[in-house]
Amino acid sequence: MQDKNVLIITDLFPPSFAPRMGYLAKYLAGHSWKGTAIAPLYESEQKVFGLLSGYINTKRIVISKQDEQKKYKRSTIQKALSLFFPDLESTWRLNREMIQQCKELIKNEHVDIILCSTYRLFPLNIACKIAKMYDIPWIADLRDIYEQYPVKWSFLMELYKKSGIRRRNIFLKKANAITVVSKRHTELLSRYKLKTQVIYNGFDSDLFFPSTFHQLDKFRIVYTGMIFSKSGVGRDPSPLFSAIQKLHNNGEIDPQNCRIQFYTNSKSQEIVNRSAEKHDVLDFIDCFEYVSFSEVPKILADSSVLLLLLQGRNTGIMTTKFFEYLGVQRPVLCVWGDDGEIMEIMNHSNAGLAAKTEEEIQQFVKMKYDEWMETGYTNSGIDWNYVKQFSRKDQAKQFVDIFDSVLKQFNKKT
Image 1 (spheres, rainbow, N blue to C red):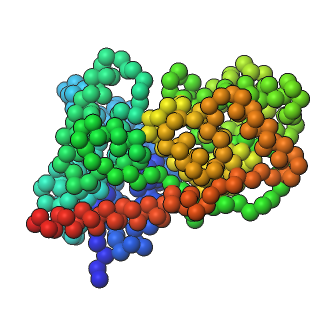
Image 2 (image 1 turned 90 degrees about the horizontal axis):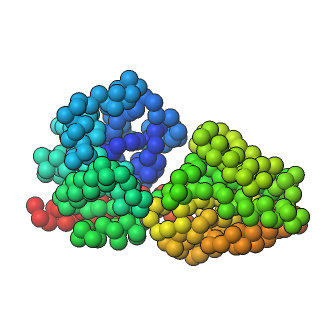
Image 3 (image 1 turned 120 degrees about the vertical axis):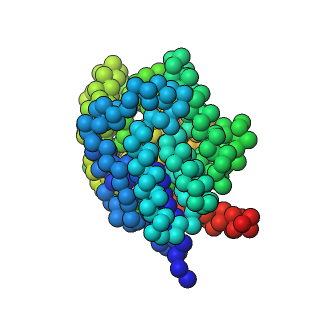
């Protein structure tokens, strides 16, 4: 039986960002599907996810560094129009060339279904147009949505946001199915009478798997990723630093064998160091530059506690980092508990603590530090039977099941 074919139209694709589509590409072949991805290639993008390249054929529209510096060479008219039509945030040239790539592909091979994965809006317009032009069913995959950011923007940005929601919903109502990354996103989109299906982000069990028991020379609290300092945005390490300061003042923890390690960019390191200095815990801090994606699993496996920083409200943002933490089965400290799905999954999986108070942080760190002092190791007690549902392999199967369901319904109508 011949493999079915999916055309993935997306704003980003590995080796740049967007591992969600990269992992789908990796596991497609195991489900009797093949695919082609069409996406921009920004020359300035860091090639972080090289491990996810080469699984499916990929067609690129190159955006040079010079074009990026000129905001992709958008005209004044287009800049004005993009306030009301945010899908024009990308250039007419990029839209035109992506459409042309889709047309050429469909001329040369049969496409059963189109999957459009987006950060907010682009390239839903392209997927919708191509699907209608060739009478192919299509699915919209929303990795992020405008509504997940509760911070009040400026007047023009609020206008841009409302325009984006309006334009997005026009396209979504024409899709044969919609997938999102959280139940919260399902709730938010239901306001517009949009039916969605949740496929979480997850971890690749080929890379992120439980570490075998081994003693560690130091007690390490590890964080990977960016830090934000703006009020209401989140990812603020200061509650942890305040707790560490109190533990140190009480003589319950020692910087000689307790390290808080951040793998992040230079701007985030500055935020970390300022906050650590304010709380007088600089002696506990190690800041490192980002490491290659292939090095991350070992860093996580060699941790005593994995730090997850959230903004403490249920936004529906389900960071991939969280699921990779679960995959290596190290104890997780979440600051703050978000009263949403991350906290729900934390509690259900027994992964660690979703802290609501600084006292809880102190108690958790002290408990794990004492455990390490006694054994040289920290246990997580994660429920693996529950956690394994978040593997990327299983999630590829979820996508394929939706492909097959949409195709079945589409063929009945035609």
